[in-house]
Amino acid sequence: MNDSGDEISGIRLSTVVPARITAGETTHQLTNTDLAFKLHYITTVHFFTGDAAANLTIADLKGPMFYWLEVYNRICGRIRRDGEGRPFIKCNDSGVRIVEANCNGKTITEWLQTVNGGDHHRLLVYNQPLVGDNFEFTPLVFLQLTKFKCGGLSVGMSWSHFLGDAFVATNCINLWGNIMAAAGNSTPPAIINPSPTLRSAARSPPRRSLKSLEPLGDNWLAPNNLKMVTHTFHFTPKQLSHLNSTDNGVSSFELISAVIWKALGTAEIVTVVRKGKHGSGLLGNHGVEIGIVEAGEMEEFTNLDVIEIARMINRKFIDETNGIEGEGRSVGDYVVYGANLTFVDCMDVDIHGLHLKGHCPVFANLSISGVGDEGAVVVIPAPENGIDVNAILPKDQLQKLKSKLSLNFCNF
Image (cartoon, rainbow, N blue to C red; front, side, top):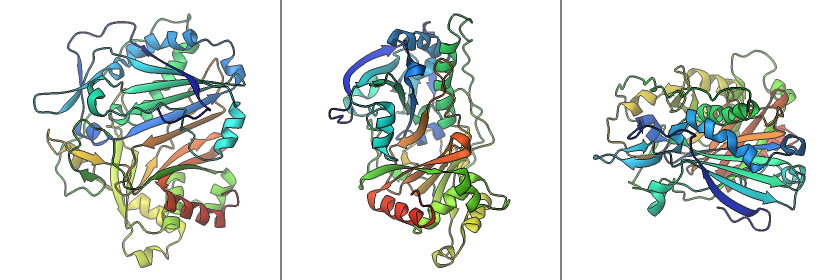
């Protein structure tokens, strides 16, 4: 756990397993795309008011998890390696780790004011990557339940990215809320664990969207040479309209990415991770596309306006995902997020879909840990048609971005 000082206390660990035992020797095989993401972790945090959390005991929160994990029994497994050293998940029902914690010194409102656009996930999402001696025993998913002075509750999740993309992760935790809401009114949902629909394993030229690393063995944590800092920028509908006053055929994601790419102004190539055409299944990363966009001559690029850069992101995306599946069974260690400056399109993620007792979260956020030195920008929907942007960048680059955005948007 990160150093929590006096803010978070009373930490208690427990484990929840599926209500029914998974058939013996069940395994979940990981695709090459899954393993390309193995050094990265998706994190989510949801804040609920005292009214939403009123009279909810830890037993009320844990009880529905047994049925939830019947559906998602594979996330209760642990990593093993086959005879060739390729990782897979042994579905041994070892469970999801539950972290109970207290924040007795702040209300949720005070906490969010203190963070003030900084790292909303720090201290509220339990951090234990798959490393070292605990590699085969480390849970793949952690859920931290933090109670605040006001009676409110935050739900923080750490999700091993090889289990699935951001769409899969949010669908998973949202189902827990749905089962909680239906407690006593329905039978447990059927167990569905379909095999993923894989892309063709066509070979492609050398990939530039990923960064190959020296073998890391059982230490699944991306190495960094720079200190990475996280900040959340909020774009209002008015600001978005100002950027794109007419229909220019570009998405909000492409527009925001263009603003930030131009503001930072040094990346000749960027990686884009976006929702693909294959759709997301129960688990797996087959629903995303990984590719690059090239700036061309940087002198010309710096003279482009934001709309022109957004169109470039839209039209000049080179999909490299098929090449990852074409690598055969020998998969190395890679950084995806932060190999180049990376833009992550999560605009269709249902980040606000987790409800407690019919209450929506007052604030919800999704980010990524294990980002490489070039940084990543995660674009997610915000309430009332706004957009939240989580920038995970080296400290000097983040300061540069804040300064550039402040010239155009007064609230930055």
